[in-house]
Length: 327
Image (cartoon, rainbow, N blue to C red; front, side, top):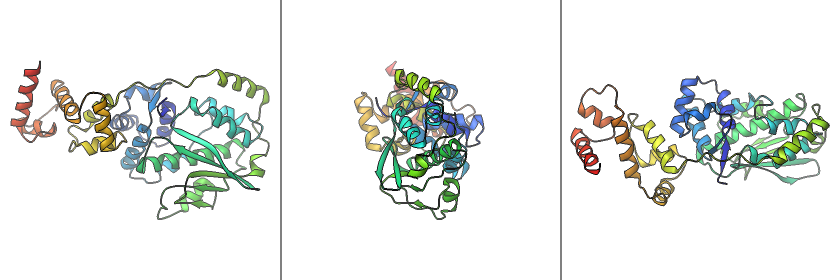
C-alpha cells in the first residue's frame, strides 16, 4: 500500500487545535483533504496531506508550538484499538510492542521501531515515509508529544521519557519542549526522531493491565486488514488544491506543489504519468470555476480574469473561445 494515514489521526489532531469547524474545513480543503472525510469514521488519506495540514494550521494560528500543545492534549482512547492494545498490556514495553505490531491499522506512513538499547534505557524511533519540510517537523512534534503524554496517562502520571530527540534544528527557546515532553533531555539535530525510556519504567506493571480484555483485543486486531486507502489520483488532488487557490493569490506550479506536499518536479512527473499536465489541469479548474459562477461578485470582466489567474479580460476571452471550440 502507498503511504497513508487513517483519517481519525487527522481529526484527533485538529480537535486539539481549538479551530472552529468552518476554519477546519477550509484548511482541510486547502490541504487537499475532501471535506466529507473530516466527519468520516473510516478511510485512509494519502501520505503527506496531514503534514501539509499542519503547516496550514501553524500559519492560521501563528503559533509555532501548536503541534506540541496538541500532542500534550491527547486523550486516551482517541485512536481506539491501538490505544486499548497499549493500555491493557502488562507493562509499557509490551504496550509499545503491541502498538508497533498493529500500527498499520492506523497508518502506513508512520513507522515506530525499537532502536539501540543500553543497559539502562530503550529507545524507539519514529519515522515518516512521506512528508518533508516544516510539515514533517510539526507532525513529529505532535506525534512525539502525543506518545509521551499517552505513556503518562497510561501509568497514572508516573512515567516520563528519559530523553526525546528531534531531527529538526533547535528552536530559539527550549522551555516549552521540556515542559510538555516531561524531560530535561531534549535534543535537536539528531539522526532520528526518537523517544527513550528507562528500562525500569518500561518493565513497571501497567496500572490499566487487563489480560482478559487484552486477549480479546489481540484476537480482533489479528483479523483486521489495514483500511483501504482513499482512492484519489494526484490530478484529482490537484483540482481540489487549485479550486482553493483560485481567487486567493497567484496560482503557480510551486504553490500547488507545496499544497500537495510534493516537489515541483514530482508533481509534473506524476501528472505526466496520468496523461495530463499542469497547464491542462489549471485550465480545467479555471473553466470549472467559471461555469460555476466564480467569482460571485466580480467588479468587472478584468477583475474576474485576474481572480482566475489571467492577465486581463482578453486572455480570459481567448480561453473561453478555446473551450467552446473543444466542446
